Length: 589
Ligand code: ADP
Image 1: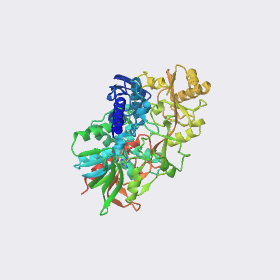
Image 2 (image 1 turned 45 degrees about the horizontal axis):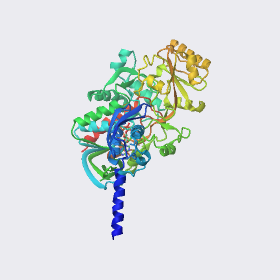
Image 3 (image 1 turned 180 degrees about the vertical axis):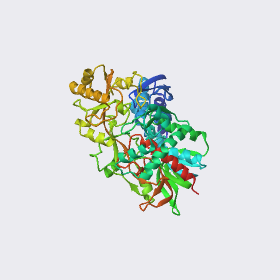
Image 4 (image 1 turned 135 degrees about the vertical axis):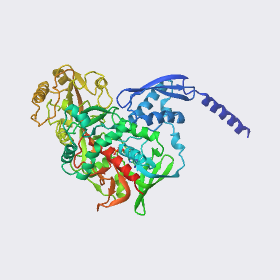
């Protein structure tokens, strides 16, 4: 007995000794690590002897909106678990890793045993929340909180419906928030002062022809006729577009509107501002919808898996599928791809949630799926990540594509599929975008992804030179070829083309140094196929019958863009059909 109590006493002493041992040297320490654009996330970590007591973010150049959940959650999780063994936030992986990296640096400075902190049991996981089922009710249930889903939510609310939006990712925005954001609309108020001739008819013809006449003309008509009114609707909600209308990559005509805010953040902010300022719309993130159920032949119940268990949402009027495309789902890409070389090792511009969930959800309740083989690639992927960031082009008219031999190889104003197919035929499927300072009058000028040209040059994602000879050296291409390519281009600018490649879109001569070049590769961008709908955004079955109560909008739908979507038509599509779906869903009995 006595022996045991002596041993116990010794153990207590030992335990006390160890628990008294300090883990950190108390103080506040700074740490930094590179985020998505290569710039450091810098933060400050305060520790006492045993605990991390505070984490403050000092500098952050991450994409607004996209990285919010990471900044909100990761520092909290680190504090809560007192560990670095914390999951990254899906959809914000780069930012998550930057935060974890910066905290690690700060804790190293505080003398912490990083290995021990990183090997800890994920306490949050160990404390697994007990699964419960939550039943929610609204007039309209929307699956997916990207552009189409949020447009539908606002529109349904404006038409008197209560709305629940279920989003599987930790943040709203989907692909829309990281998109190039160009919105095509024939818009006399902006185009006439710029001397641009346009009409909805021209938009209609180009959209249909640009998709090899495989789109449904009724849906194309709905798209082009509602594009400008929907842009005005967005403006009425507070969204700002620049006055200058331009030709976006593969857009074929100067009718693209560029938001004032970077990337697609303006759309999502506009919708979320409305949602936050009005009653009747609940947006629930971290909830992956797994099933839609029909009740008496009518779509009305949606089941999803949330952070705290199952969510069953009853849509008394309707259910809207707005889950986006499947560009990030390699298996589905392989299953449906008919026209490209294997896409297994090709990057994507898409967020990781673009896995085509809506296709299975809708098909199970009888929806027809159309055009799944039409997968859009861009010749514009970051060579490492496949993302659009780092793209230096400002407008189609003012840049050329140069291969590794220093030569042009395609009409750079062509359709996206034509340009990407041509790129696949070049050495290493690699090209440089080359342009001059007409596009970047100052080093502070930003590209469409909120990156200044100075940042891109500093990070080696673009090269810059005062002469084409010097630029060729930095690009590692033949200087004579590059100079001949630019001279040819400049001659065509003078005559207005068409040049030897058939190019007709020109604006300025490329003659004003400094010159810039940025490398690009093919990347999977958009999936044209999906759920079959009619012009009211109602989902149809294989016989063309309406599935009562079921709507779909955005990239999850098919049949609008045919075999090739025009650049600038996606933002028009998701907003137009999202708005239509919301209004019609609200009008159901
Ligand atoms: P669109 O441009 O058509 O609106 P986005 O990609 O912008 O497409 O938005 C689609 C949204 O749907 C994304 O935020 C995505 O995470 C979400 N989503 C996809 N599948 C599901 C699912 N099973 N449950 C809930 N949300 C989903």
